[in-house]
Length: 302
Image (cartoon, rainbow, N blue to C red):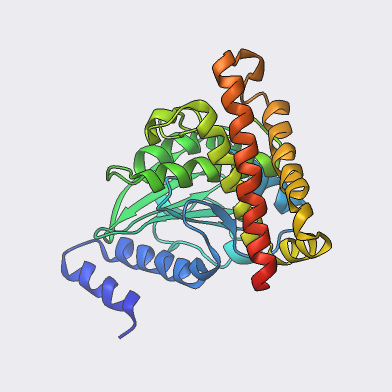
């Protein structure tokens, strides 16, 4: 038996509302199709977007704040228009079928799978979020306008989707890198972030200070970019002799430091003398670490 059909049958046998059980099973089946191209903790489009779709995605990207263990998919009309709740359930009908639908589906895996389905289209007559867990309809949030919906999404997701277990160091690291990557992509310092979970804003989360936190964040961001674009890494490193990889690494790091400055994420003029000295030390150490990794990649062809 299909896993989703089996799960749906189990929920119905547990006396869950059959309509809710089928709808959640359907949403989970949709996510199963797209999870191979998603990354936990990151909102990801499930297909290429045109300019109009990209504008709404970028708006959502700045607002949707995810804990590191969540799957999140952005569905433009070419996909979302094929995913409609049963006509008999008025509370789940948010947009007329002839209008372009934009959906965000967020899944919190675990013993009790929780899934949120948000309709954020400007053409929705009831933009909002529906929440399901283990085949049961937990409730919804309805908003009067698309603009209010977008403003309130982050709060609703944080309360009803974020992982409840205690975070480990790797969770704090992933959360901060995901936030910074979004800001770097959007060039927008207003990207939503929970500063109590972001080690850049609260270095004590990973038992460090703000200088170490800064360089830890930037070096991780550089490594992430190189991992996602290995061709760029190969082309750049192959242009360089091994002895000149440090200037390349320095350029990567300076570009991100300039971004931090431009977005006013840190006041470098506020550093103490000790922090200025540590900044110089950590800059040199980070450049060497990045160049070493570039050298290894060049030597192994990876």
